[in-house]
Length: 340
Image 1 (spheres, rainbow, N blue to C red):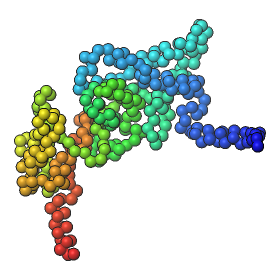
Image 2: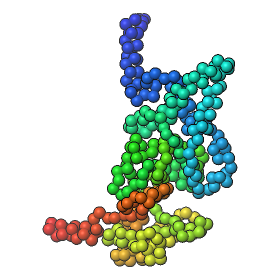
Image 3: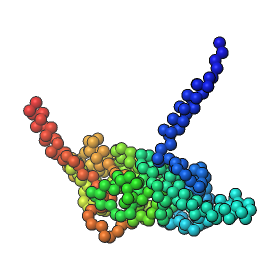
Image 4: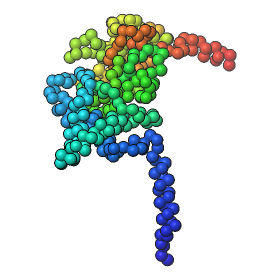
């Protein structure tokens, strides 16, 4: 038995396809509305404005300008990026009439490309920003942190942030937070980030992935011989032994490594060192107390610190405060067991 596609079936298929397309195209679609430049070309020019496809040697002519473990802040010259777009558009101009027509519509093209810059990188769940971007700033970071933590968190703000400020979790569309227009690893250890605006504060932070443990390098040591250290905590309260700002022989221990295995921690030796210095340890550490000593929050590097901000900054110190004192918790458990 042969089957045929009737006109009714074809009409229903066409209507269904049109309905599906109508569900995809929303008021946030960058191609919604009338434009001088087609959507694909508009996005290509927007990416070009954000230096996509520009050779790295044009950004950093000499490797000495971006040495190892350094960061370089900059801003994009609009005249330079406009010339970049005009050069790309000039490929299609053959005659003087073509150039005259391009010059007539270029102001509209420039406005549309300005808006397209904000659609290249669109965070999930956030509203599309309609207006054109302002001054574009950014930085180039060359560091082992880029290769060691591929998912570094980068945030920029138009004002400083204090402890009780909701900006720590604000969306990029928040007026006080700078939208990240581009964030890309150009090399294993080189990170390029572009911001929509001129930030007052920039945060670069290790990715948050549940409970984390670790040590710190002593900043007082020379770069070629820095030692890993662990700040000692009180076993009952979880408070760091003062002074919390610096490493001293009384409040920290050097991290021992296994012989012939650089980078591999000697867990047993480190436990003994911490037990010898941690207050209320009793000379030994239980597994949970050992974990408390090694607990570390993700490290956050802050660039920019305006002096007109009052209050304790939330990024000032990497501190841990136990919500319930262990002594109180133990006495509560003993009391409840006694009642049982």
